Structures are given as C-alpha cells and as structure tokens.
Image 1 (cartoon, helix red, strand yellow):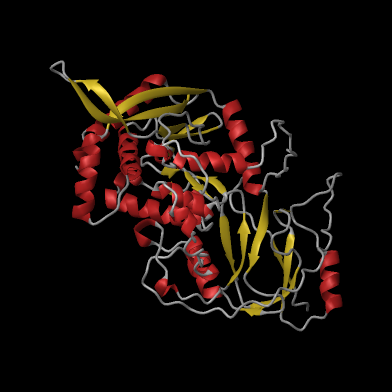
Image 2 (cartoon, rainbow, N blue to C red; image 1 turned 30 degrees about the vertical axis):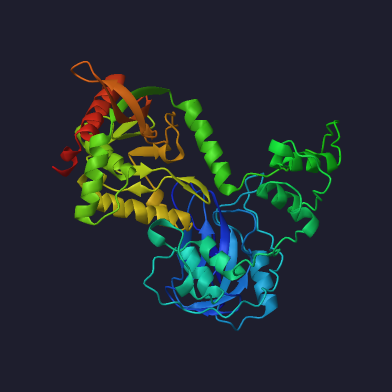
Length: 472
C-alpha cells in the first residue's frame, strides 16, 4: 500500500479561491512531527501557519515558496515515509487530479509538476536570544538568524521597542566619518584685512585673498566678497533645459492589491453610500486619557477610546450594528469593531471582538496585539473574518477629514480625522480655542436609514465629549 499523501492548497473561508506559499518551514526530505509548522500560506490579506496533522516526511516540494498563486485544492507537496524513490514521486505528481480545478470543458485536469526548487543557499547558524526587552517578531527572527547581540541596540520603536530596521543597522555597523582636518591658512592670507568668516570660507574653497578689494568698512573683505569670487570661479550653468529619461516602471499588482482593488471597486459600485459628518470636541477626552493611562498603567491611544466609544454606541443602536447578506439584514447583540491598519501586505482590518464589553485597557491591549501581528504579516483568518463595523483613522497623518469606503458585508464605516485647534464661541459670547475632530460615517442606505445613522453619531458624540461615560 502506498504511503504517499498529497498536501493541497487548503480553503479558509467561503471567499478564498487561491493562495501563495510564502515560506516552507520544513526542508524537502526532512521529517516532521504532528503539530509542527509546515509552511506559511498567504491568502488575500492574511498569512496562515499550516501545522502537520500527523508525523511524516516532506518527500517532495511541488510548489516552491514565492511562486505564483495556486488555486484551492492544488498539489503543493507530497508526504511520505522517506523510503520512496524519485520515480514513485514523479508518478504521483503525474496522476494527481486537483479536487476543485476544472478545465475549459468542465473536466477535471491534472496539475503539471512544477520545476524542482533550487537548492537553498547555506544559512547562517541561528542562535536563540533570551531577552525581556521589547522587540518585534521580525526583528527577533533576524537577530537570531544573523547572530546579532541586541544588548547594545537602542530601540527606535514605540516605548524603546527594537524594530527590524534597528537590527539591520546593527548588522551594517557604525558609520565612520571622514574628517578632513584643519584648513591651512597662509601667512599672506593672514595679513589681508578680512573678516574671520570670510577667511574661513576662502580657505575652505582654496581662494587667495591677496589683492582682493573688499566692500566692507575701510575696505574689509566680507563674506559677500568671497562668495562673489566663488560664484565667478564656478563653471557657467547651461541655460538650456534638457529632458532626461522618464520611462515608467510597471509594478504589477500583488495578490493582496488585486483583492483590495476588486473588493473596493465592487463595494463602491454596488453599495449606495451616503455620508453623515459631525465635529466633536476632544479636550476632555485628551485630559482623561492622560490621567487614565497613568492610573491604569496602560498606553491607550485616542483611537482606542474611539473604538470603545463606537462599540458602546453600536450597542445602543443595534440598527447600525448590522451586516447585509442578500436581502437579509443580520443584527448583532455585540459590536465586533474592525480597525483599519496599514501593513506590509496593504490595508487590513483585524477585528476587536465584542469591544462594547471591554474596558479601555483591554481594548488597547487587543488593538496593540492585532497591530503587531499585522506588521509581522501573521494575521490569521479568525483575526479578519466578520466584523459589524469599521473604524478608519488617518488623523496620525494629519488628514483632517475624509470619506471611507464600506467594507461588506458590514454596512457602516467611521472615518476619523486629526484633532485640530479651532476658535469657537462660548456660551457667554466670548471666543475660546478647543481641539476638535471631524468624524464621517459612511452608511449603506439599503440597510441603514439616515435617522438611524444620525442617532448613532449623536450618541457617539456624547460619549466622546463626556468620556467619563466610557468608564460607567
């Protein structure tokens, strides 16, 4: 009985149609145990670790890492017991028929074997770094692979966190400045009546001051006189403007960008968006945040407070906390708030589950965990699936106001701008300055009416301007 077993492209979620092998964690011909991570597979916006379901040997890698996207069900590798010969593996590849692939006529077709992967270059001996210092997963991996001592690295990330770039800089070593030494000044130059700055500039540019007529008081040579001599000695610039090559470099969409482009195009075309805008005062929130961070020992951001306030407002307005599936509106008792995050793989929206039931320090901890996973490209399908509402904040980039595109099947998304100091009229007719944030709610009019969206924004405004309610 044959011991060969196929390892095929798995399917995560109903929308997944293809995936890409990002990295093989087990070498070809190596044995593995149940629970070992076999490879990393990239889908639309996430990278999943695939674990072995039982012991075996990775007899052959059919699809090497970094190649083209493969459809669900495609043969990626062959598992065995290590005793198989090359002819048996070749025959298995030739006879394999993907379970979900069909030809143009609808008949199932066999996948052609991929070219054998090139022999990997010998890797450096990795070390295990035992440290309590904050360091990103990718930075730790690089430090262990390249045997970098991180004790002398000063982290440039948030709260002194060592980043991937910090470890790269440590590998390059310190830069050695090229010192030119003192500038020689001749006795003849010292006898000339000139200002110290004029002497220095002249010495640095190799200009002799003897015989130069100064324009300063009593014929003193000034900085302006020396700069005029330098300009006169410089070669004349051509007045003709010459065009240089400006040929564009074509950068094709990667897998993530293709999915983002397709989903956003469909969302903007198919969803009847309408927009509700409101301005909220945040001075009280900023003051409370500063105090709460000290008392709670947390690092909650303004965005964390907006996520919490949005979740609490959604719990009070279930008609906004919805998803649309066909002609059915699904209402949820709790708010699963997605947070838009810029990652190396593009825009992703990991979800803070049941945020309305959390305390602010719990929201801050969960969002920091999701942001770190997004930065390292380790978001799972469970981190991304679902969501009843999205918060997209561009305030940290100085953007004061923008309109966001709804992320289906959700029916609303909140765009958050930067806090801006504005002059406002007080109750007694005076003028005072306060910090205000512009909020824009994009709403799917098929599922949510304008009055419902306006009621949600009014509650959200109250929670932000009277932030003590967030601790009730």
